[in-house]
Amino acid sequence: MSITVADCLKLPSLQDAKVIAGHNGLGKFVSSVSVLEYARVFAMADALFLGNELIITAFTSVMDDVEAQCNAIRRLHEVGESALVLYYVGYYLKSIDKRLIELADQLDFPLIMMPPNDYHLRYNEVITEVMEKIFEERKKSTRFVPLLLEQISAMRERQRNVSGILRILSDHLRYSFLLLDRDGRELGLATWPMSLSQELVDSFRDCADTIAQFPQTISYHDKRYEVRQHLLNARHQKNLRLYALGEPDVMTEDALEQAGEVVETSYNLWREDLQKEDTDDLIRMILNEQNLDIYRIANRMRIDLHALRIMWVIIPQGAPQHKSHDLSQQKQSVKEYLRANRKSAIVDSFDHGIVAFMDDAPYPGVDGELAQDFMEQFVRAYPGSVLVWCGGLDSIMDTRKAYLLIEQYCSTARIIYPHQTIITHQNLVFSETCYSIVQGDNAAMLQHLSVLAPLQGQKDETDIWKTLTAYLIDTDKSVTHSAALLHIHESTVKYRLNKINRRLGYDITQMPANYYLYRALAIKRLLDYQAEQK
Image (tube, rainbow, N blue to C red; front, side, top):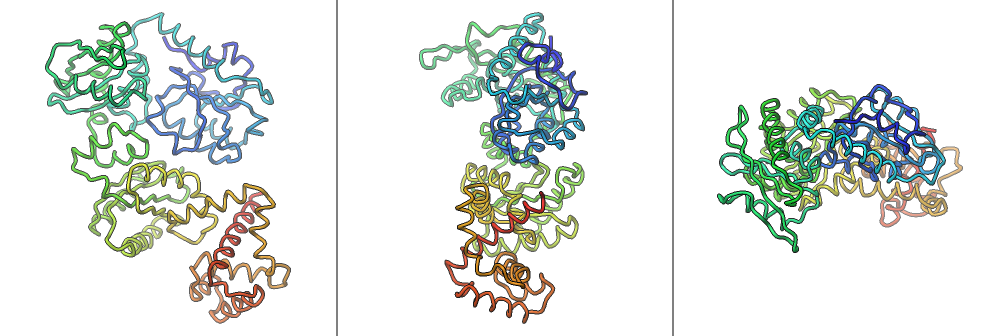
């Protein structure tokens, strides 16, 4: 009933494609095809991936960022996808870096390259042929329970929850599913399509809350939908109620019976995964845009999400290599610290780091001191770690935007601020500005750097650069801290700063000149880093 990656490669649209890595994973079965246009890890939320999909991309959003490409491969492997098909190599992606190939081989994740330097290839040819093949195989057998259970067993533990299982059923049958417990509490919801109108979703929920006979009919925009009920009795979870919403001529009683069997068997096999639902899960739901579950769980646990206006994202050094038990220890240390300081917080691991949401103090300085004190302790245990601190988050949308900024520009911020253990939201916004300048028009970038021209070409140029950068960027205009960072006497720092003031002809501590110098030094630091990497 299932087709594999190897089967897909025999189709006409893929017969000229080349497997360049992950050959040991060609036996993975394929249940669907999906296009990945934006390959930053943050945007690749768990809820968007069903597992066992053939992913098509040209890596246009990360074509110049090999590390981001590797992170995308890691994420796709983590969520149980089957393979990645790369288009337009030689056009968008100039070449495939050996690091990407080595990673795919290590993960046994098939990396498939379409014929390079061919701009006439079309996604829809592969999508059409693979999906037709899948539908042909499904027609050969109406029994889908073993296939879906195999797909569920391949899911990551954190994905294997009620909503994740209902999502697999919904995608396979094209019904919307709702699961309630014996007391009528909602355990999970998955809609087909995912963009189903909220008005129709609310009507679906209202039907499930009634004690009327089923099936029931819902009318929406002159279209009829049918709601059916199926009662379940898993070994450890009695009197579950599964509801399905779909078009009357599409739904069948046999399909609903098998869907119930999938849910019952899942509860019997993975009872702890499905029944575990605590405050920590809210972080995953907020950042993964699982809007249907967030407020349900928060309200049940009496958590005011609007009060959690500060986000900490703690990124350990070499994060992707950290083992799960290391992250578990770090997560516990964050929880204990915040609890000891009477902070209302939810904490969890996410994307190889630790994320914490907490309430803010009446005075911002208090929260800054708290973060500083925490990191002084944390870096002793985990050297090289960084805390990204975002405050003033008044909505879940603010939170997601802040996390997306971290995903995109934290690595840039760490280059600009190599001596800081705490990076703020403002640091990230500034890093985005500097990155855009470096990646933009060369003439415009040189214009930004022109403020440094009076300091160039002198025999003491290196000492001048180090002192000015340490003073303005690394130590927030502190002579004492600059001297300590450079391992020189304070009087030497003062002497060099005075020389800089004379050469420039103005006081470097005054705005707006101070900002232009600060920005130029940050851009120079990025350019120096790029030169070192080359």
